[in-house]
Image 1 (cartoon, rainbow, N blue to C red):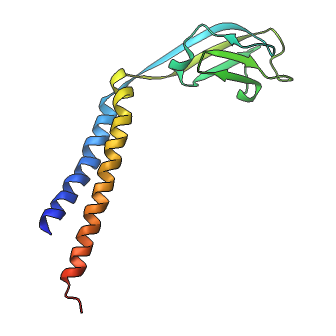
Image 2 (cartoon, helix red, strand yellow; image 1 turned 180 degrees about the vertical axis):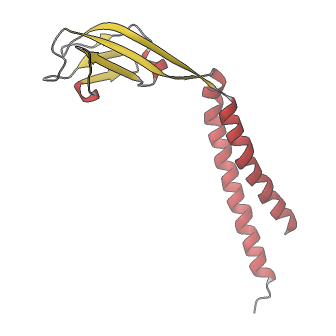
Image 3 (cartoon, rainbow, N blue to C red; image 1 turned 120 degrees about the vertical axis):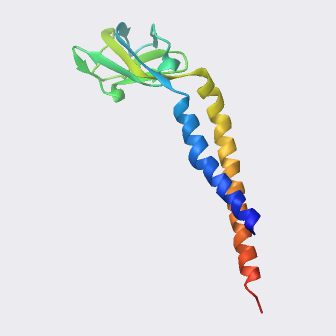
Length: 145
């Protein structure tokens, strides 16, 4: 029983200390790119100059000095393009400005985070199994009928 309690404590420490420490240690850098001029159309997708995937939908579109609602345009992060919505604030061939901002995570964090999620999931499952087994042992040791 004592071994199971120590296993539970060690797994809880791992989940409570190591995982948050890793997540914070693999820092991110803040970025911003302002004033990319682009001609937006409702007829076709327009490729933007900046790498859209890198910005993870952290774009802000401006037209005539005002922020354009995201419902007024479509943003394709796969190929880095934008298209105006028919009948929206962005008329055909509108000249708009795009600004990007957000955080770039380093390469190790992008690679290791999915693996860490799997490891944490397995650790949680093992913790539940150990805790459940300890409870069953405690109930069984209580002197049944």
